[in-house]
Structures are given as C-alpha cells and as structure tokens.
Length: 135
Ligand code: THU
Image (tube, rainbow, N blue to C red):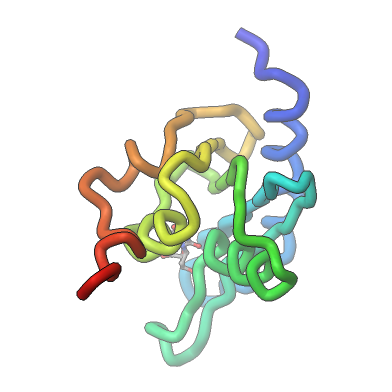
C-alpha cells in the first residue's frame, strides 16, 4: 500500500536530515522530522561524542529544537534509520512529556514506513507531568 503524501514527505525530510548525523563512533545514522500542531517542521540528527554517554539522539534534538522555539504541541514525529530501528527509552520519555497522542512513524533508509504508533503505544504506563500534580 502506498504511504499518504504528507506522511511520506515527513519521512523523506527525516531521511534527508540523516546525511548530517554526526556518528563517527557508531556509524548508525538517525534522522527525525517533527511536525508541530501549528504546522512547522523541525528536523534532528544524532550527535555523538568521544565521551560516549553525552551523545544525543536525533528525536530529542528535533524535540528540543522545537521546544526552544516555543513549540510544545506535536502532531507527528518521523524517525528514520537504515534498518527501521525503534526510538530508545530516553526518547520515548521525552516524547511522552509533550503528549501521549503524538504519532510516531518509523521508517527505514529506503524511506519505507515500517511501523506507525502513538507515543502511548510506544511507552505504556508512561510517567507524565500529571503525576507530579499535588505531589
Ligand atoms: N540513537 C538515536 O539517535 N535515537 C534512538 O532512539 C536510538 C539511538 C542514536 C544514538 C547513537 O548515536 C546511535 O544511535 C547508536 O546508539
């Protein structure tokens, strides 16, 4: 089945962004494209560090770029890797911070949609900002 054009173009943007991934250690390129409810798109790539744990994932780069520009409501995030890999736990948590209903598109390096789900499906029983109310 053919992927709808708006979904495909978000995947294509994430895939294109992957070219800028800074991955001298893992060589594993990840690209993300985040569409806000206001219609803007922010891309992100993974940025590695010689001090390995300070590496930042593509999804979080895209989300942090958006939030730092005043955007907090997200419609969809596309994540592209060579093999259609799934977002890590840390990225799932950051996605959950900004809404469990955000749609997550997972695609491979050919730009093919492998899986689609919501953040709620990706991170069941999420700890969210609501849990901190009245604490
Ligand atoms: N990576 C991401 O960018 N996003 C994820 O959700 C999973 C992992 C990056 C981090 C590191 O640069 C490389 O992939 C291998 O772990």
